[in-house]
Image (cartoon, rainbow, N blue to C red; front, side):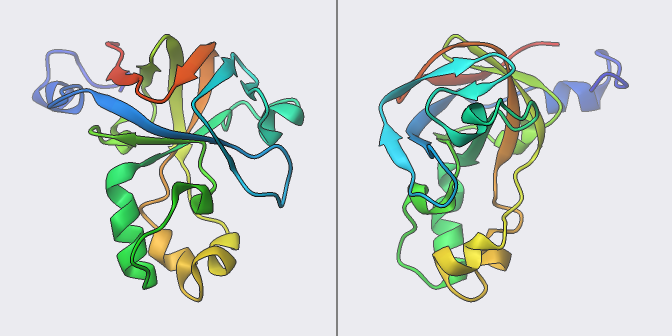
Length: 168
């Protein structure tokens, strides 16, 4: 975004959203190879991650302090992998968001409640999706894996919090 002029049409298009998003689900994975634990709220720690999540327990990973996926993509992943539905915990992302396109936050700052985040990269699927979703699960998630983000300002995330873009 830094290379686009704030006066350009493309800048305007890339920074305009039809509505705010909302957190629908939050999950933590306290250790590798264990199931996700759904929670109603969690403490986000700047530069580290989410309290109780394995990435924070491993001293954080900076770019991947939190992972997010769009609720609207869950039915698509289910259809592409041959399932009626896919529960969020199966996909190993921390936060499910609806109503706003997460990919638009790649390289941009946004807020969930009082927590300031910066989208760092697409959250591509890993080989574990084959076991979780069955043969072809990896490919079913390609393009639908969500977003990785770093936590710039901590606070508490809650199910129901609004997700909003932060102006540059």
